[in-house]
Image 1 (cartoon, rainbow, N blue to C red):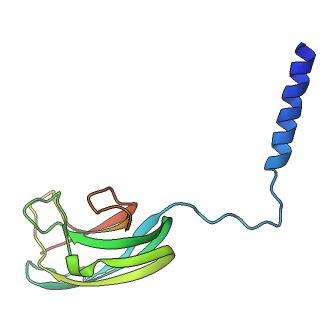
Image 2 (tube, rainbow, N blue to C red):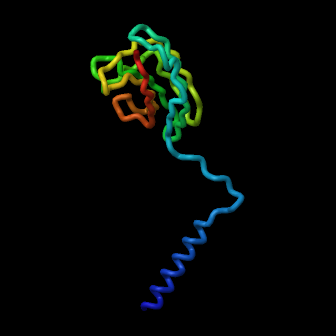
Image 3 (spheres, rainbow, N blue to C red):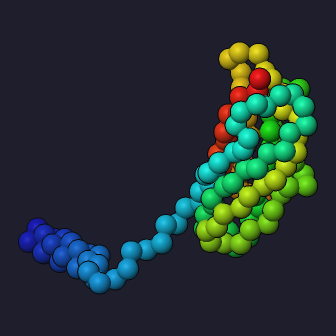
Length: 145
């Protein structure tokens, strides 16, 4: 009986090993995760607490949903930890990878040290509201004089 169990276990192991081998010429599978990176934020100097036009470039990859939404926000409200979404700047994106450039005008806020003014960009699934956690996101601190 023990020999039969051992033989069955060995056969199962070899069968599983052989079925998991990859063809050397087969292409690598595409990444299956969502991501977002802020590539640049301008301007980076001379920023004061007056109306300022910002250009924010992002790269994103949406894999977990057919459609999504890019949302940009700044912590220029009443609480350093809260980010106010720029409603007019949200943009719909389709599954896949791409870039987007936001052009927004806001009034930056100078927070007392050690708190920093920052830009936050998030990628959401269109199947969920922005009250749900984003699929991916990034933020960039911005120095305010």
